[in-house]
Image (cartoon, rainbow, N blue to C red; front, top):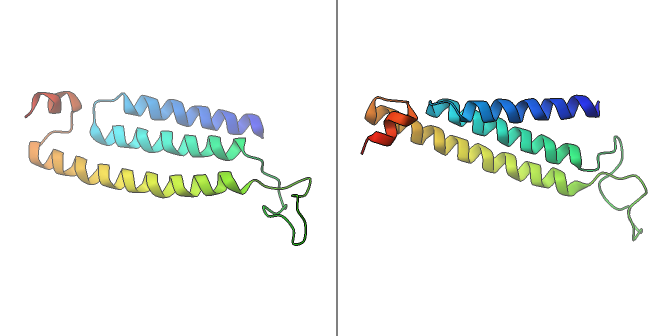
Length: 114
């Protein structure tokens, strides 16, 4: 299962990089979203995940149990999802406005415009 997760994360990074190298703004945004999701999966898979174990220290104990889930990665990923969604939404609106004004979606053609 670990190997399958590593392959999925690698494919997401590769697909995101490929999409970001295309000339369209929309494909750039799709690639950015894929790379963000791959980074979230990488953080999630590298954290300590134990099925059915709590992420908190038991009441009255000063140390966590031997098997526990790390809650830091879950909090980081939740924050990254919200921030990533806001960035993608803003970039999507911005790209729609640019393509509406200039009637063009090509990044090379946009570089020549003023």
